[in-house]
Image 1 (cartoon, rainbow, N blue to C red):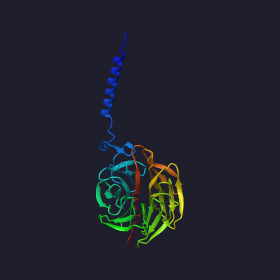
Image 2: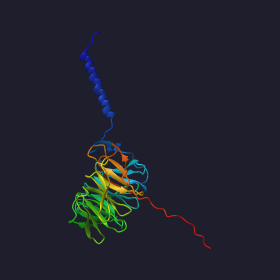
Image 3: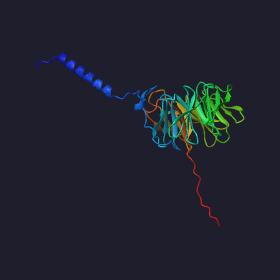
Length: 325
């Protein structure tokens, strides 16, 4: 029996092309965010399931600059998508207020939005007149939002009114802010590892000079008044006492580029990590004793993780009975 090799090759090519066309028609469109996919800076990925109930006390909220997404992380590490895309654009700074509203700052357009516990997004204010990049946001003792970036700190009220807290020297390259919940002192950190403290009267003092900390990306205040710092270039988490003494809580693997930090009700630290390699973004839990464990990690969900905030668990006062005699 004779075989026509050329004919067989033609059939093979036709079958192959037909199969490829069928696969292309059925394969998921990785750019179609409406179908659950995104095209991030580090490549395509898939979105987690959407949040189906209310953002609750004990939950975490994180921002991802690459996906334009804001995510909910439940206490067991489950990842859910709260919102993605316009008007959220390059979200960085994030904080949660006492009512469970998530306040998010865009680094792309310096817009600030409020996301209610059900996921509805509302524009609040724009701070372009005062900074070119939003670095971080925190709540002050009055319930206002303090936003830092470039060389300025501004106050944004829940009604959207913007006023300058301080702008210019000595502030430069501000990246992080943490506000003491009792004293109202503001701790501000920059990309050179410097930390300033500004008291309610506006007096600014340098607490930590450049050197011990490399590149500050996030800060939080613990129950003892210490400042817990995420050091991006140092791959570390540091503890700074109110007098300025710096000690390292944890450094090295698996941390590769700590971006932000928050503290839960148990006093543990939760750190967003954004390595340069694709598919390695994760959130880690670090105890004050320096034990580091993965909390939420996915090669599919995250692209460029940035901010993280914790919704403080509500405290229910004890009940008691009063008997009148």
